[in-house]
Length: 71
Image 1 (tube, rainbow, N blue to C red):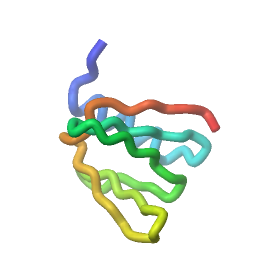
Image 2: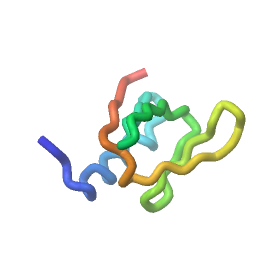
Image 3: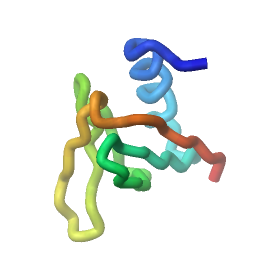
Image 4: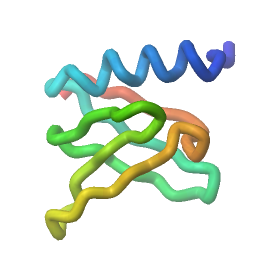
């Protein structure tokens, strides 16, 4: 079952708040990104911190799917 964009956003917002859940994002360009615990969502942008300490934004439209794992 494929979620509608708004449903996906709601679900992702919910899981981003839980620090005990690991989130892996799969992007349209084939990139796979693991979000660290210091993450948030601002509008349609997922904000993550890279290992170098920089902030990076990932637009929801670029996300194909997200995997959630209990840590």
